[in-house]
Amino acid sequence: MKRRDFIATLAVGTAALAPRPLRARTEKPGVDQDNAWAVLVDTVVCIGCRKCEWACAREHKLTDKELPAFEDKSVFDRHRRPDATAYTVVNRFVNATEPKRAYTIKVQCMHCNVPACASACIVGALKKDPRGPVSYDAWKCIGCRYCMVACPFQIPAYEYRNALAPQVRKCTFCLERLEQRLKPACVAICPNEALTFGRRADLVELAHSRIIQSPGKYVDHVYGEREAGGTSWMYLAGADFINTELPKLADRPIPELTESIQHGIFRSFVPPLALYALLGLIMYSLREEKRIPGDQRPENTSHDA
Image (cartoon, rainbow, N blue to C red; front, top):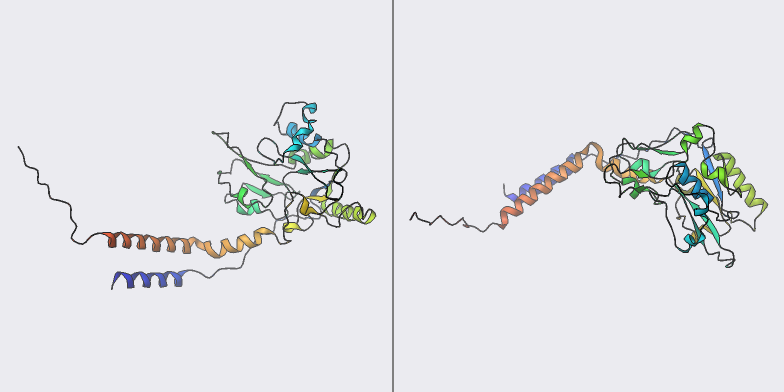
């Protein structure tokens, strides 16, 4: 059999051995979403005081600065994102309907009902806690950072400056405080009640009641109620969310799509292994063809003196 015919036969055989893709078997988290803890962020009443930033930083030992250091509003001149040194930040946006009255939005991990980060984590370092938070186990983490790629909100941050024991960092939903029956630190300190903590179903009802009672004050949209399968942090706003940094997402949970691809392609690792074997054979064949016929190493013509 010629080499080319052999390769063609191998390719056909590899395709025949590959299992058919399965339908996604996305695990539904054992969480009663209606009764899980959640937070409603009312951006209309947020005054951008940044007290939530300070409370979060102190709670997680990210700063030793006192509150007055966080009263600087010049930080609003540039757009910021949560990182390994700040799990939540407040940004300011121009109000299209009222240019003289800017609005501010607090940003942190959304703690999705069906988190894409947990789905992408190959070692189970991230998981959805039955109480609502998406928790992180640093001991399991191998630093692959797939969670950072998977998150549609671009929240997980990596400690690149920590050379010895870097971790993925993000809002923890103050899980330790929840275990003590306390509100998250940012919610507890909010002076204007822009942050409301409670059961998710109750907060969804509260959000819609505010919209009905003040139709000119809010847009008829509770962000996070359905986006990406729903989130534990939800938002009200006085302007279309397309004017904010919150991305426009479909209602379908992201893992339902990604896991269907993963389960179809990587089941039992047979297709990847067969593909690698095929590619290896092709590379070996091409190397053989590049050799010049009759080309041999020159004989050693040196003579002893």
